[in-house]
Structures are given as C-alpha cells and as structure tokens.
Amino acid sequence: MKIFKSLLLVVLIFMAGVVAGVVATRIVVRHVVGEVLSHPETVQPRIERNLVSHLQLDRDQRTKLHAILSNAHEQMQSLRQEYRPKMILVLSNADAQVAALLTLEQQARYERWKEKNRPLIDALKHRS
Image (cartoon, rainbow, N blue to C red; front, top):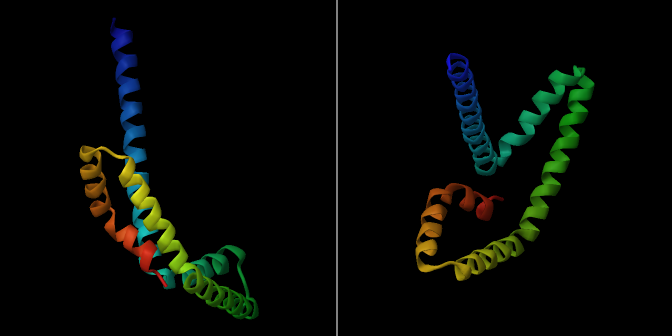
C-alpha cells in the first residue's frame, strides 16, 4: 500500500507538471502571437537579430540581409493590402456560418469567446 501511494504521488506530481507546462506554453504562445499581430513591424528586427547572432554574420552580410528582409517586408505589406478585403470577407462569412450552427446558449458563449479574443481577432482583421 505504501508503494502504491508513493507511485500515485509521483504520477500526480508528473501530471501537475504537464498541466502547468501546457498552460504556461499556451499563455506564452498567445502573448507572442498577439504581439506579432499587433506590432508586425517588430518581426523583421527580431528575425534579423536572431539570424545575425545565430549565423554570426559580418557587416556586409548584415547589410545585405537587412535589404533582403526589408524588400520581403514591403512585398508582404503590398500583398496584405491587396488581399485584406478578401480575408475580412472570409472571416466574416466563417463567423456567420459558425453562429448559424449554434444553439442560442452556444451563441451566447461564442459571443463571450469572441469578446475575450477580440484583440487577436481585431489584429487579424486590421493589420496592415
């Protein structure tokens, strides 16, 4: 019986660690995604710093990397501007379809979920 209690305690501690890890990971990922969606201008400098550090780039390579990433950033902004209206339409249609399949109680929960996630939803719809 003593061994069973010890094993049970070890399993419970392990499971608590798993749950804590999952919750912490979700919080961190949600924060990082929110930051990236809210401030897309911070992505390029982060990537540059990471690559410069990881690849140990010299000054000439850093300059060329900056030009490459700046060009890619400008092209992506242009694409976002072009496809943004279509994306908003797709998101709006999906929202309406999801709402239509729910019961009244589920619709109320869905609206609360959307309010809780409003910053992410707005960032998706309004980023430039």
